[in-house]
Structures are given as structure tokens and as C-alpha cells.
Amino acid sequence: MSDFDAIDSLLDAVGPQAELPPCHVRRELRERARLSKAQVARALGVSPSTLSGWESGRDPAGEIRTKYAYLLDGLNAKLATGSETEAAPAAEQPVTAGTAATVTPLSSPDLGQDGDGDGDDVELLVAPEPCVLCGRPAGQRVAGFAQHLTPADCRPTATGAPAAPPAGQPTAQTSKAPLRTTRPARATERSKGPARHAFQETSGPVDLIREAVQGALAEHRGDVDAATAALVKRAIPDAMRLLDETRKGARYDVIAHPWIPDILKKQTARGADQIWEARPKWTRHELPPGRHEVTALDINGAYLSALKTHLPLGQLEHSTGLAHDRRRSGVHLITPPEWEHEAVLPNPIGQRDEPGPLWVTEPTLRLLLRLSGPKHQLCEPPQIHESYTSGATENLLEKFRIALKDARDTAIEQGDTVTLEYVKAMYSKFVSTMGESNYNRELYRPDWMHLIRSQAFANLWLKALKAHDEGLAVVRAMGTDELHVIGDWRRVFAEGRAVTEVKVKDMYTAGSDVAEHAGEGE
Image (cartoon, rainbow, N blue to C red; front, side):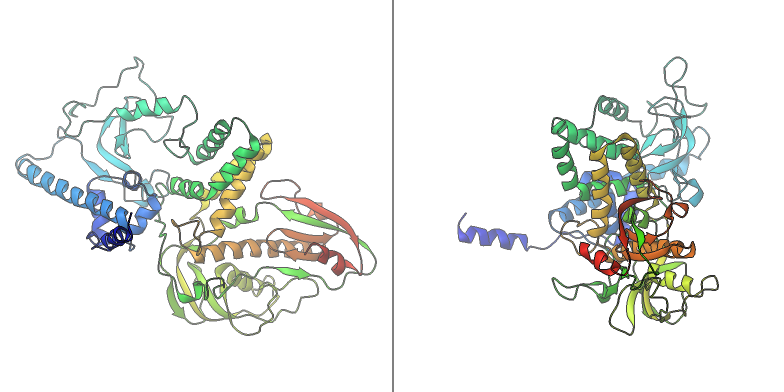
């Protein structure tokens, strides 16, 4: 290609972009066509969370924008043609029990596929249709196919033939929208062995993880090290697909690319933003007289447990004043209280040299408010000057967390190091790349990243408080998972590898030189 050809190609790429309708119209067209987010996202080659962003305020660019515009134009034309051809018969013929079954989207929070509401892929049928899996009457459509929601309801008839539809209901041959029969055959073929693409057509989130591991081991002929390296390398996109799977039927949409205030943006390319995460980095200055056996405890799955935290759902909104709304979450500019217990417990805001106001996250603020309350009375309440918050829920990532936890527990029980390292990489990289990262373009939530990290730090601090209240001497607290104590810690913490347990990382004897020993690992 000559220099001028390259320039011509570049100029061609700068041409006008395809026109897109407003965001609410995009969603309306998809819903009127009875297409799920998963169906549309799969056709466009993106994730459902990315499609959610396009339906709530973000626009695609480049070739994918052209494809999306083409799809929306086609849906608009199809729906317009369908409404014209059906208008006259609809006006002439009243709706009766014998009319073709109509479909009502599930909009009630009580009618979601998994009880979580907003069943985007589940539709309630006014009249039952034959299930595509067993042939018995089903009252729901899932992703466009009539089928049962639970395995107990989905069972073949005694003769093995599809059950006859109820009286007055059209058969599959005479129905206006005949049922497709290709999906069961495809599912049967995939059940013969591990899927080539582990995140397609599976029965649940944990299966996604298991099949990904089986596929990697098969691809690398059982080489554990090679399979582990391959899985860790793809941990970020796999975690995003797992997130999409666990969000199916959820009540809240994940807004993947909201507007972000300047305080959450890096000031320089290699710099940091203005959020203080309150990372513990504390060593006790003086021990009780004598020499002591110190146990360094390792907190299991710190970031995995921290996925259960109050996350803002939508765009952060600015507010001022001292009131704290527990129904919302975000970041807050506060003046922290004085901490007078440095001799026995770390400062809950971490080791900060600069005095004055600072931006902290929701977990840090809630921890300070808790410690200033009537139960503990360890400090004064923090002063809140201004906040950026949104409506929040503590369970936004709960199914995602449980899927990873269950896979981790099974891997530990079976001695499966491949799955264990894969799961660890999934949740750790998921947290670390949801900010300004080139490795994860599907999710840009630096606020979530700070909140989850801060929750892990707050969880460690609360373990230090529990140890102190139970009579143990807290010697050191570091990062998310390191707690050094003196005393019979087994009466306070359960020992093991589960996320609710701790394990021994090190044991050493210390006295007046504890600071020197603790500094050796820096």
C-alpha cells in the first residue's frame, strides 16, 4: 500500500457515522421484537452489559455502530410492516380463548426468572405452549422458546411424544409464530463433551467455570501448568461473561460506562485519582512485657468476600451536607475524626500523613460511622462535606460472587489447583481492571473498584477489632489479608481455607524487636 493509499483509507474511516435513534427507542425496538439482550448482543458480537450501555446513554463507534444501526433499522421496518398487516384482523376479530396465545413481558419484581425481577429473557404466556424440551405445556418463554423454568416441571410425557396443547390453543403448525426445534438438538450435541467455547449454552454459572477448565486441559493435553497459564491469561473476558450470565433476570441493569466525576479520574497518565481507599499498613509500636509467640494469619479470599458491598447502580450525583443516606453509595469528602487508639488498633482510615479533608469510599465512611456509634464509641462521627452517590444495593454482584465461591470451594475439596488459580485470577483481575485499564473495555467503573478494595480493607480492620475485643493482642494489620496476633486465636477465628476462615501464614517469637521482624518482609 502506498503512502497515499494509507491516507485515503484513513480519510474513508473519518466519514459520517451511522445515525442511531435515542437510547429509549433502541430498547423499545428490541423489546417490541421480543428479543433478549443476550440474543442481540450475541448477534453483534458484544456482551449484554455492553448492549445495556447502548440502551442507557452510551453510543458505539466504528464498524459495530454501523451494524447496530443496521439492526435497529431492520427491526423498525419489520415492526412497522407487522403492525400494518395485523391491524385490520385485530380490529375485526375479538380476542377469545381460541385466539393465538399472546405474550406479556414479565415486569413485576415478583415474576422474574430467578425471583430477582426484571426478567428480560423470560416472558409469561397467556395460554400455555408446548415446551421445546419435553413437549408438556409451559407457561413461559425463555429467550423466545416456550419451556419450563425448573427441571422438576420439565419432564417427558409417558409416551415420549409432545403433549397435546389445551383446548382452544393453536398447534405448533397453525400458530402464527411456529416454535423452532433446532435448540434442543444443538443442546444435545453440546452435551457429548466440553464445549469449544466454554461460555455458550450451559446450564449455570459454575458450569461455565468447569467447562472452561476442562476445555483448557483438553487443549493442552492435560498439561496443568500450560492450562493454568492459558486460563489466567483469559481471566478478564471470562469473568465478564460470567458476570453477564449471573445478571440474567436481575432486577437492575449494570450501567457499564456511566459519567464519572473528575475526582475519580487519574490526574496524570501514571498518577492516581483523588480517592483514599484506607489501606491498612500498621504495626504495633509496643508489645506487652516479655517475649511472645506471634501468629501471622492469612485471610482467605479477601477480594472475593468484598464483592458483597454497597455498589452504586447508576450515574453518581453530587450532593452537599452532613446527612448520610444508607440507601445510596459512592464517595464522600470528609474530615476524619481523631483516632486515639493507635497503640492497640490501626486507624480505620489507614496511615495518612496529610491532615484535613479527604475523599473516602462508602465502606470507609460506614466503618467510621459504626465506630462512632453507641455500641463502640471509639471516635467522633466524621464530618461529611460533599458526596457523589447513587442508589445502591449490596447484592449487585452476589450471584457472581457465589458462583466464584462455589467453584473455589469445590476446587479446594478436590485438590484442583487449575480451577483454584483460574477463579482467583478471575475475581482479582475483575476488581483491578474495572477502572482506567486497557485490559477491560467492557466495564468502566472506577468507583466500584475503589469501593470493593475499601470493603476488603474494612473487613480486615473489623477482624482486628474482633481479635482485640476477644482479648488477643493485635500486632500487625496489612493490606487485605494479613493479621498478626498474640494469643489463642483459634477460639476467635475458625481455621481452614474457606472464605469465612483463616489459615496460618507464619509463626515467630517477638518482643521489643517486633517492629524489626515485621519489617523484614517489606
